[in-house]
Image (tube, rainbow, N blue to C red; front, side):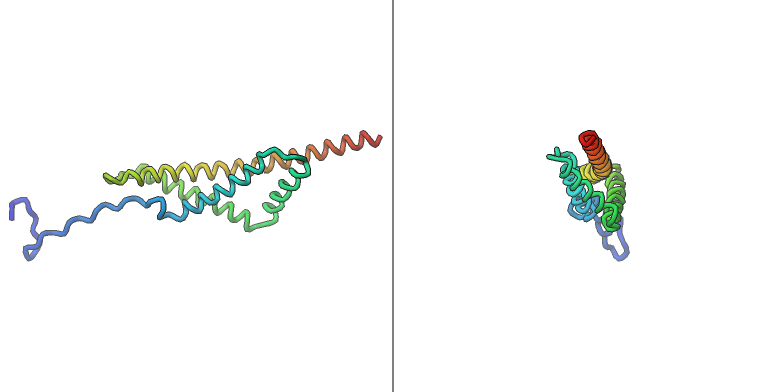
Amino acid sequence: VGSGDRVMPFGRPPPPPPPPMPPMGPGMNPLNSLGLLGLFVQGLIVFVLVCPMPSNQVRGFIVEGLNNLWRTSHAVRAAAGLLCALNVITLIFNAKMLGAPVPPGAEIFLASAERNVYLNAFSLFIYFIMRRLLEIQHQLFEAREAQKDVIASKKSN
């Protein structure tokens, strides 16, 4: 036994330290998968809302259907609120992982944390875009209906 070696009682050397635990990987956190699913659903709704509508009747059908779903279904509003809360939580969690020291060889976890921060932030952003587009499309539908009523009343006079 050399002078720098540490010896445990009964002459046994100490056990080696455990390897450092890498941060939680992308496949291990189901909240990120749930956030990604929500992002796809929100993206689909935004895509439908920004597509050109063939007529005001089609716009009214889509917008009124989505507005009625939002106003009457507490489950939809609760799910959207829960999804936003989960996105905020995972955004904070993943942002903290970006600032944490990463053991050598675990840089892939840093890259996945960065990707998850972008996905969570974009999901929050697209939620607010979706809500605003729904309001704008509803206002456009009402304005065109009012315009049709004015034109119809002028023709009847």
